[in-house]
Image (tube, rainbow over all chains, first blue to last red; front, side, top):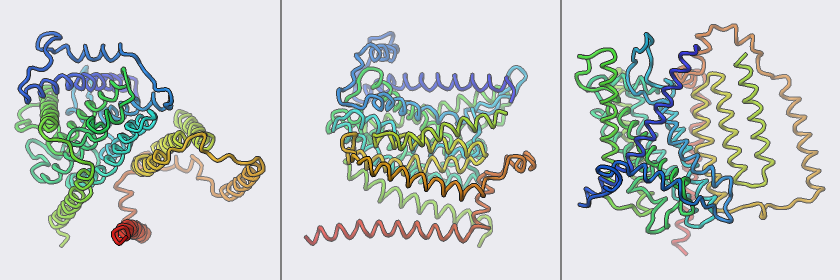
Length: 342
Length: 177
């Protein structure tokens, strides 16, 4: 453990933090522009050319608003709720391999904060504790709509975690490893998992929409029924953190989809390059995939109406979980057959 | 040594948060302290190089069971006022019986203290680094411990079938009524 390694990792963590927040901030702008485009409007265009300073204006507005705490709320839990939401949204990026190793100042550096050997399980762990932010925030507000939002969020997240986990087992079976680096390296060039596991991807995609509380699964904050859901009582930057954590989670889950199913930083024809140029192109390819998924998630939000709660539960328990289990069994059988077990 | 320092700090934090679970008068805060305790226990597992167990501990206990606890507590809406007040006599009785239980536990566990550090250090570093890996755990589960593993999975299956059956019967009754 040398000092250079610590500095290197520290710099990487700070850069990842800034990138996550920057992309999340500009996702809000992008989402509003996209919504405007889909609905044939102009969208935000007052702050700066084409309105590109809009996220900064929003941020300043959030900070300058009155920070109101309801009278009968649980003060301490009310404060840490948004904090937990933001924390869980951010920590997943620690295990994401952003690109192949680069050589800088005579040192080989990994573009990954840590290659955790149970990376896939770490994702599940973060997803499963992600619900605490919303639950704690919703309950501490001491408002019946917030409580409804919190309860909806927790039951929705618990239900969709199962199908998500089972759909990921097929990827683990195919790669033979729980490490995200190994999973990415197995998909060299164009040999992506999506060609082998389209059903698994579909299940994972739907579940990650549900886990990030994006439409059509945004029942926890369903404004037509629950005012604002779990963040009804929140104001100022606490509300900002809740809204922001949704965009960070969207960025991270897009990155995960790119890694698990679309080859991560691999792109066709990557063997023609080497060294730092390869690393740079890989990072560009990876971010292109991430932005594509962010676009698809937004596109879905402005296209499909919200589910009813019983439809949501029906889809989760009676459709996605059986599909995922059958898919997992078939994958297991095919792998066993290929290895000559029969 | 850094390792020992970290494990002492972690141990202190674990005991502190575990104490807060009982001392906190607020049910929801107790649950939160319990979740924190599970995280510290996972930290100990990471120190012992058992990343798999650490993560599974977080997923199962902090991520699933405690969420259900919190879910139920939120619906019950317990708070400081609704907590039953106990008389002094019952409090004293609880302290005495708890103390005796602690004594029995200490007596029972004092013989089975974990092997001291030197024994673990005698293994090669590669051995220690590979000890808690998923591959080794999986191979052990499917060879040496196959019978307990399968029996416990049947137990889980029985519990699942049982809960489905219970939910179903309730539905039929309401339809008959």
